[in-house]
Length: 254
Image (cartoon, rainbow, N blue to C red; front, side, top):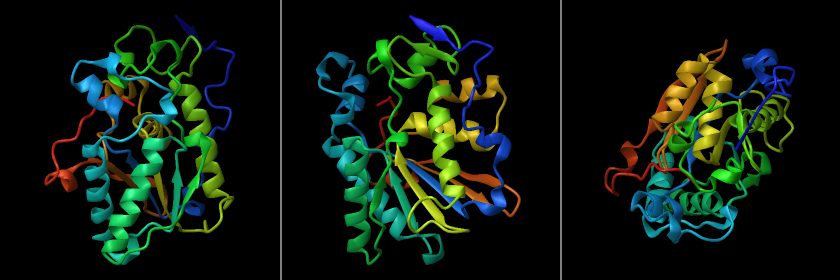
């Protein structure tokens, strides 16, 4: 069952898309999705029943750990003026482990990543009655993929609301070490990547839903926006070339 947000309800309580002044925000925003989780592997193998336990405690697979190492090595290979100055991370185990492993891999190459600031607002979408259904499957389940709220869960509009609040806090310097022109890294989930596209790129509703159905972020993928002085502009979308030596990433949800 779904609950459709009524016309009287604001789509975003924190309307970052209307009030954001990019000139006062971060210089660069990078968002990475966690490495492959056991749920990703189970869905890819057609065995969703193999997944149990709370969503927040789903761990990485060994492949997901290797992807996280490759992610950290990729970040360490960037020029020094691109290294993240602030890291905000989902509290979910798979995201925190991705950051921990990536940070260790970067450290081994002489680059120290900041300690992660854990922010509950970067948690994965609560899919409620949909359970651990992959995001593209949720899109094709009927109804409005952005506005519909599954029973006991969140709509993507709800997720966009809380992520918009994070962006507003980044803009306003509410986090330690955040300043004008900071380079910020989010370690999170595909739903977070998806709503960042909505908030920053401002696509049409039809284009946004199409993007959801095409999978907005592979495991351990990198998506990056750079501030050109007038707005954040997408420069890297769902990049996974750093994973070539590991294996092709799984792209199913969770």
